[in-house]
Length: 323
Image 1 (cartoon, one colour):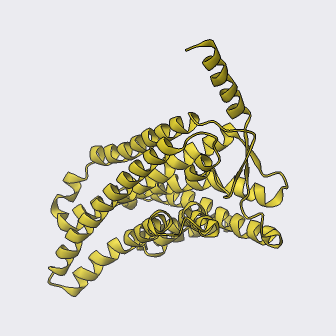
Image 2 (tube, rainbow, N blue to C red):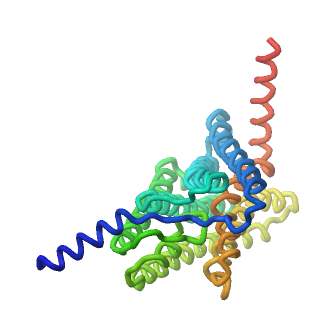
Image 3 (cartoon, helix red, strand yellow):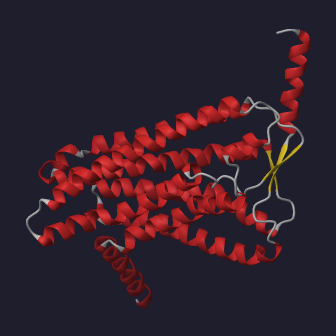
């Protein structure tokens, strides 16, 4: 590398390191700052209590030490971490005038948010496979879904998401950023970061497009294939009671998948949805803030064993206070 090109590279690196980002969030709605703060604070509180509560419930009840709940506890952990990566900064920006975030702060928020969203994508696919084995091969369920396989599937989900996030982050770090960069969102999202860079965004855009398409299509393929076989098996069941029980065990998971993938497909695949920044923000709120709150509610409200465990925990606490 020549002396002049090395100097240019050093200047660009310094510019990037010193760059700051301003997260506009919902600043254009001045009158709604306090109501939005209260709404998001309530959602975040429910998210934290719901997901950490779900992990505790699964731990304390031996009946819930099954593959399905093992995956669900990791889904709750991912939802808690995901929401905690995004929501505190959103809450802060609703009550302070200074909405800036440092370059490294923005990159780190994106890095961790990316890990958790990709992990959730594949965790839902793993849970679909678990339901497939449970419904289609019930006699072999405990043999097929061994502790070793369950741990391997969870580890693979985390490992792949970290690899994806490291790749995206590495290529984001090759971009140059100059001065103050305004991001028209409340979160450091990939497209928003790339949009404010001074560099050619082509490679970054292609990498995220190819990778996100692969992640979404492969996980959805696992989910759809699993549920096609599940549906065929259920329809062959002779008793109505058996069919109802099989459907009810899958209903919570199908609801969670429909909300999560429906939001992502709308945001990235529906024409013109990217053109409206308000639509982007609303969709981003949905899958970064609301979905992590909904998942524990979906699974707990439809699950008798979870509700029984909560009831026992509450009763034991009441008895302790009385004594």
